[in-house]
Amino acid sequence: MHYDIILGILGILSTLSAAKAFPHKHITNKPGESGTLSNYAIVTQGEMIEHSFYQIINLCQAVYLHAITYWMASSVTYISRLILLLLVTLSWIVRRKFPVNSFSANWTTKHQQNETSDKKFKVNTKRSSNNNVNNMYRIKKWQYIFYKHVILHGLNISIAFPKGGISNFKNVDIDDQPLPLTTEWRIFWIALNTSYVMEFFLNSLVKRGILSQQYMMILNGLLVCSASLAAVCVLNSVRLEAAVLSLLLNFGSRGHDVVNTLVVACIVSYI
Image 1: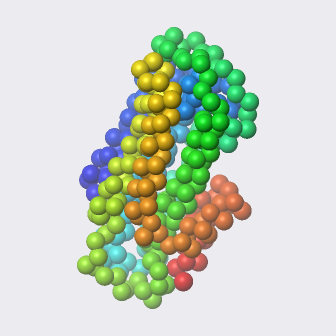
Image 2 (image 1 turned 120 degrees about the vertical axis):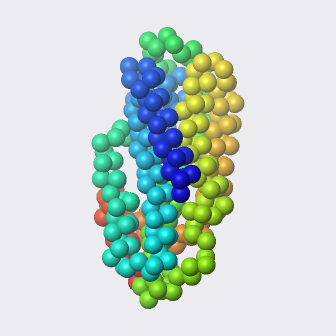
Image 3 (image 1 turned 90 degrees about the vertical axis):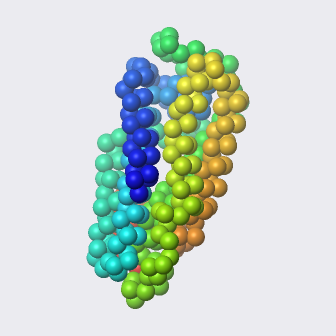
């Protein structure tokens, strides 16, 4: 548990320290431009702060998984499980307090070369293939949807309410190794945190002229693949119905993650 918490805190601090130390607060990209993959836009302070929110979410999930799997050995009650699930999901209430950068804006808005007065960066003005960049943003969008409704909400609900309904709560095998103590979780947790940190770091190397845009795109592709493959390791702990219901409620009631998650939990707890 200490390992997960320390790694999560370091990820949050690295993002916030970069947002404070870098002069990105003075940068505004053209509408629809994100600096994480583009070779002519620059990562803004808002994008860094947005990432810090998701790193906070990740840390909350790690603490939640350790807490609920530990208490499960004592056959924690239905209400207690629901309260723990509510607590880990409450952070989504403040989501709109953080910057929101749309994935789809990167391929639905006409790109123009970004002009900036930030002389500390060597900006590569040679544009890369829009198709390659846009396809990567599309992949990242669906990766985010998968992460949010399968690995985040879906997993949280599934751990709180395992298959078998309420009658199965007292039949937990205490000899089973809790998910956050497994090798699968360790691999996923490292890959997830690495992806968050490396995305900004790679972009900075491109702007400094140390790394080429093409090589950065290749490394980003490897990060996407590694994080996705690592996520497969924890899929056995996710109930399909929980993930599907979370996704469907998101389309029907977007932005209401707390209510949606509790509704899904109440439904699947009786299945």
